[in-house]
Amino acid sequence: MNQFRTAIPSLNPLTGLFFRTLTFLERDIKPVFVLDGPPPEEKIAALRKRARAAGWPSPYRLGTGSVQKQDCFHLLKLLGVPVLQAPGDAERLCAWLVRRGSARAVASEDTDSLPFGAQLLLRQLDAKKDGDIVEYSLPKLLGKLQLTHKEFVDLCILLGCDYCDKITGLGPKRALTLIQKYRSIENVLLHINRRTHPVPNDWKYEEARKLFLEEPCARVPELMWTEPDEDALVGFLCRRTYVKEERIRRRMERFRQIRESERKRREKETAEGGYRQTRMQDFFRVLRKREQPTESADPGSSNRKKHKLK
Image 1: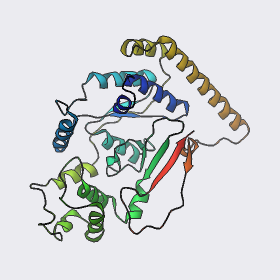
Image 2 (image 1 turned 135 degrees about the vertical axis):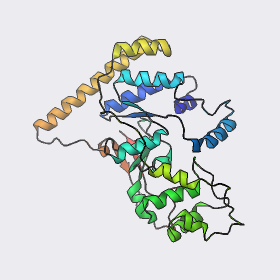
Image 3 (image 1 turned 90 degrees about the horizontal axis):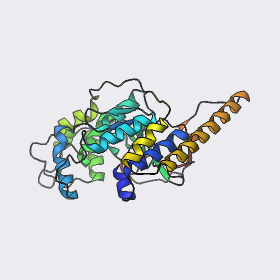
Image 4 (image 1 turned 30 degrees about the horizontal axis):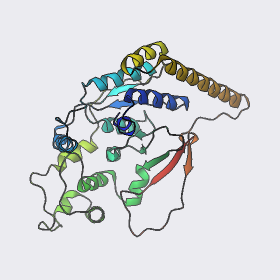
């Protein structure tokens, strides 16, 4: 919603969400939307800091009970896609869905999904026909950095996260070298110069580590996708966004035509014996560059692949 508001201030974000979700469904991508819940206590300080920087009166500007989130929830239900309410950070529940096999990847701009354990993270999944989609593979990232998942979480905490402060003066390369050598924050603390790298008072890195590594306390219902309710969508969007009914009807007709065309194509492939299960790479043109030798691993740029949405 914030992306739509920033990119096109004159457009109601609900309209953007409507069109983008239909584009995903047309390509046989089955999205599961996860909404943020109440933030954990460890994140409150970071939220207050962001609110001050943005000039917001409260860090809970888009809380779980906001009208905007209620409208999102209702719109997605009318589109027939699953919507889950996370007990805390949405990325944590998203990563868990991937780990348990309920989803293939997390689509988010927040890289916290990786320390939470998402095996695959997609960024810039915005349905633009000529847009690049960046893919991060956690197993490949860990292999490149020669770290376990727990060690990678400690590295992310050293680099700075939402749940605690970071050690002053400790940059990415130095932090990576220390974790690769000493394998945990506890051991790193024994070998750094406290005068040049002062440790924050009452540093809650253990609480942050626990949030990243433990599974969320959430019951996930069976994920089901249904056909969009066109009449209800028209009534809701016309009332909430003032978009013209004709435009919504026209887009829904195009949606049905594309879906029918895809159905016929699959039936033809099946009849010819060439049907195969749809794979993620069928939706993207992979743009790969030959890897160049690097002097050191960079956690901010390793193991990214770019794709283009067909």
